Length: 342
Image (cartoon, rainbow, N blue to C red; front, side, top):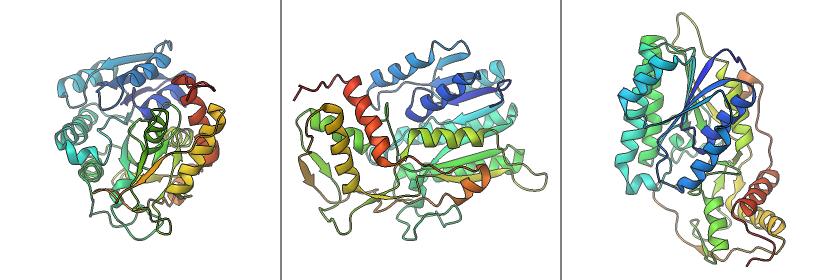
């Protein structure tokens, strides 16, 4: 990484934002982190992540919301970032059905503010989070960046598709080098409690059953391309210094970042049970309740990662066995689940 550059990371207290900030700081980079530390999930986890970043001398934290245009403008004016990673967003497919306002505020208005700031304070590269959800209920697998993505099945997906369109337009008009990243089910230690693997684990240790939204249909089980956090960060890190350019073309590109190895949801759950059994020192078996698939959920996600590999020579490698074991070990330590607790 170029340690002379200033990196602005929005969503720095979030799952991916934290790990990316940490990776850059370890390499001696200057990182400006922005986060509103909202209570969509346990804020203690967000503060625990920030605590890991504050000892670094080259880390500056700004508590603020990207939908606050004045704050964003002042941050760009004061710190003059060279590279921006916009990872702040209201996440979650199901939550977008219950609470649409926050998605428009953060994912549309917030992203617009970032684009405007990059327009008036030119940057070397803007990297921003999109999502595999833009593929909707796409039947063709694996999902390729060239696929038709005009049928989102959740508001969250619609906001992410909007981000790609907005970024393309700003790249076209103002030659802002921009890269969108379609993340595929990111998981790992210090992850998001609203994600299934984390929620299942919490339910188990609270003595509650888990709900699986696949109708109990094991033959036509849901498939997910689970991608371990270290692989995601490695991919982003390589892309930060690999901005699209060209005098006559729009400097905008989109990449899938996924594991390219989709797993059946039930296999993933069984693997999580084994990993938690090892971490907790006793057999862990979830009490399962099967329910119909939820509105906005899709039956399969599967990333074609050839474009990413061609661009930066990288393909995610972490198996779910390794990734889930690291999550299970962290969970049992962080939440003090000792070998004797039931």
